[in-house]
Amino acid sequence: MKLIVLVTLLTVGMWACKNNNNPETALSVSHERPYTIETVVDHLNNPWGMAWLPDGSMLITEKEGELIHFKNGIKTPIKNVPEVYNRGQGGLLDIVLHPKYSENGWIYLSFSSTEGEGQGGNTKLIRAKLEDYSLTTIESLYKAAPNSTKGQHFGSRIAFDNENYVYFSVGDRGDRDVNPQDITRDGGKIYRLHDDGRIPEDNPFFHQTNAKKAIFTYGNRNPQGLVKHPVTGEIWSHEHGPKGGDEINILQKGKNYGWPVISYGVNYSGTTFTEITEKEGMEQPIHYWVPSIAPCGMDFITGGKYPNWEGNLLVGSLKYNYVELIKLKGDTVVAREKIAEDIGRVRNVKIGPDGYIYIAIEGQGIVKLLPN
Amino acid sequence: MKNTFLFILTAWLFLGCNSSEKKKNTSSLIQNNTLLLQDPLKESMERGGIIYTDFCMQCHMANGLGVAGTFPPLAKSNWLIEKRTESIHAVKFGQKGKIEVNGVSYNSIMVPMGLTNEEVADVLNYVMNSWGNTQKEMVTVEEVSKVTKD
Image 1 (cartoon, each protein chain N blue to C red):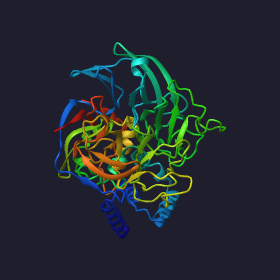
Image 2 (tube, helix red, strand yellow):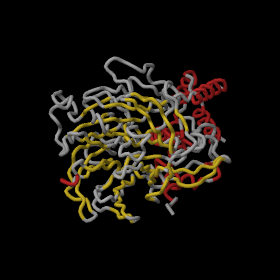
Image 3 (tube, rainbow over the protein chains, first blue to last red):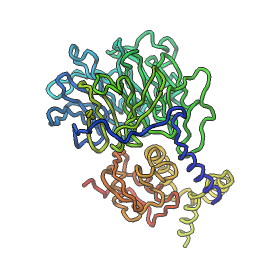
Image 4 (cartoon, each protein chain N blue to C red):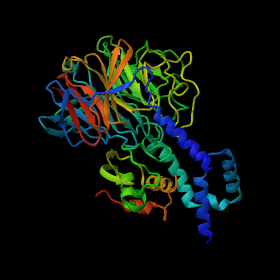
């Protein structure tokens, strides 16, 4: 038995040393910081989502269930926020404004909810308006089912494309072998709806009997990054792998991203759950990480504040406390750089309307990077 | 004496490695000894193992070693022995700020998991009896309920 333990330890050790996130693109660390880090909001616990209103004030979701309005250093709690199922990774999650917010006033929120069938909770998408520091006109757009008391993988990220379709992710809810590959079930999917919650008739499985018609892609594990490419208009996502196998994908209608049939990851225990990393009919990621960085939050750099970085991608690392700058040539990752090293557990990263990089950190708050 | 024996046997069963031979031994032992099935610690640890997989393993890893410098180890952690109440508090309400575990300091955050008192007790019993850890006394629901936020 001692021998087995020793061998296991050695294997784990060797695996951990093999720090080759995608062999062709090594992660570089720059020791000079061409930016200064400035605190914007302090004293937050788990700032999951952030959005900016036209007047520059911020809306911040705290996972525990609080929605905070922040302006000129003052935090004001928003009233009438729906009750959330605050368990494990679930809670009040993402917040995104409608692209035409100034015309229609719609705010989109995702959270875990106990509504519906079964004990526990599952991810829900709503939209609402903000009046007098209170949510009004709340409309339910989607509620994943059934509920589960498992603590993992609620997904949650929300994005709009150029035609104002709304996309959102629901993770596999810890049921790896049940949900992601089954299009008649929720979980392990990215969904697409009209902005009012109607299901588009040209969704890939709209005419398939028993399918969840809102599904846009499947075979996803736990996507916590979802954003529109500023030039192509495509929706990019990233998702957590288990131990290894975090991925960046570009969403294509009806495609299967392979979880858990193909993966570059292994079980947390180090054992394997699949022998294969590719299969016909399943999409390859444009990038994967081994070991996992636990990606959370994602945005493209636009707005001209960082000329050397313009058009590249930012991904937060929950696990290694930095933001990864992913340099792209089209859809190809050509270089990767660590920025804001040792900043803390990065829950979200976004470009603000002022063009600056904003980073939300667990247990701390929100900072921005000012170029020197 | 009998209790001690049972405890040791149970602990041994749980510390046993993954070889299929051992598993076979385990199941036949369980079949031969229905008393084991009624062992409250064993039952609690069994439930706790599921909670651990669901809520803790992503950071503290399957081997309880955590991630050096980021997520403190649970395996052979001095914290679990010396700071029992703080350990219960951390699982029940989350943990934030600087702590020292096995001589290494950590300054991170673990958000509250939303576990019930029973789940807190179960997962602690699992953690406190895995990877070479042993506890003197099993964590009970009553003990967890007495640990308050402030």
